[in-house]
Image (cartoon, rainbow, N blue to C red):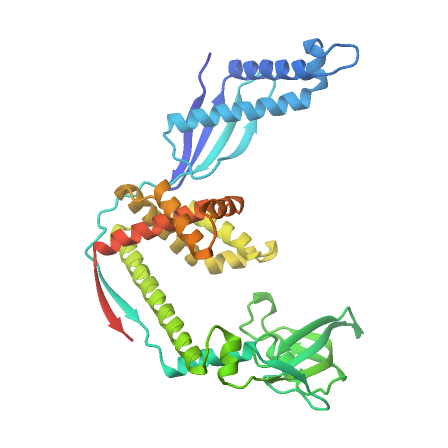
Length: 417
């Protein structure tokens, strides 16, 4: 039987475009196979199952047979392309420019993303600084204040205009030609940045129960570029104002906030958590220093195809609407490029030094998680598998092993801020 031909038409460091030609003999064989499949299962009036003439089967299931053949020849073409081009794909290929006509060879183009082959010239000998931020009394006080605010109660304010720090409940209805549209309810704390500054200014001129028609201007640095500096006419109604009543800072508050007998014990717990957070941030800072130096030393670039793929993932992760995709891509392109460089680097080191997570590593980590949660490894494994998070766990373990190895090849100097 004639062979499938594969011709490379374009490529960059992370993608290849291949033109695939499946000879007519293979297409005919796939068609005959499809007809036999449908004939064996078909139930057609006037014929016993599996006994309908081929011509009848071809007419009855022409669309289904055509689709089956297309899928079959694309599958065969993809297998041949992987073998002949020694591809290491990171995702299924996309198919374009399909040409499928009766009695003719089938042609189509495959666009496949592949992991670039990196040659790491230098992986060690870097000088890194690990800076651990000092935990101050003011930081403890600030965190204590946040916990206090979380447990505050909100009491109604009567016959007074709202002030910063108070909670308001309002309705905002767009005005079009002097007619108010459907009002939208909003509840927010004045001064917390939850509402437009111009809207907050108008709210603070009202008493509960009052309504005003006004123009609200979007600030020049608004997140939505299309709204910057624009004004909107709205009908604003203030329904309710509440003030925050903070709980007393005493031992009873400490017991309510957590497993602490005294206020001093709560403060000590906050200080310890802040110190642990500072340690984590310091470790993260060292890793990012190391990644930047490794990328620069090895000239690692971010292939456009992988950057595009990363941006596409971020678009979906953040739920960005289609009409804002272009603006999002422009803003996040540098971030996506840096993430691609980082992933390529860590993957290359893991491959070169054979640091990928093993089944033993994964089992040990699952057992550790089970011990922390007071459950069994089997339950943790089942939960991760159901949530499709096992690959995420595997990547996390691999990354930890890679950084442990990389940091052992460089010098880390401790510093305090």
